[in-house]
Length: 253
Image: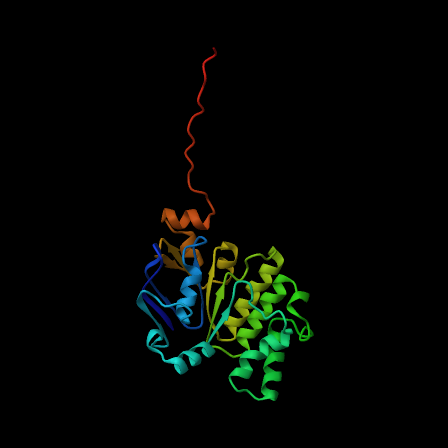
């Protein structure tokens, strides 16, 4: 289980997280929803210590991430896969080279590396793309390679940063299927998104992030039945009420 306890984070005078607390139970996809700029991606970076919180703590399987030394942190990052918003593939490397990089760094032998590259590409339905460069792939295919790279290490958790952003509806649905398939393989997922169609599709639990803290947690059905006006406005995609001033009438002459 991942536990986020009273996290705060600011950048200069801008306060992003203001006491965020959330539990991510094993074996499920938990989805953090909220508007752009609300701190969803920042939250993911805090989990693997790409950023440090100003206060509060992150615990993964009972271990405080903030107290880990360099070796312990490297071990954690091997157990927690990260699928970046724009895939973050190395442009000069082929698909297979991008996937194998983490395996090489962790000391796997060549036979095991080849096997895991093939297995992970099979899961994301990209077998045969091993020798292609990222520039030869569509946006959806690049994101699928990002998932393949994450699952090649057989992680316990995967963090997904806006996995359907920029994708057409059909490709986004394929990404949803991959996230559910990965969960069915026993990997716990934490997804951040403002795509409500995707959130309702993949999320076993949804958590609404609003103004720096978690406003409500529940199943898709519970969130859709919420009486909280902030939650309802977001999931229904209703804009904030705009008050228009009446036009100024000019008298003739």
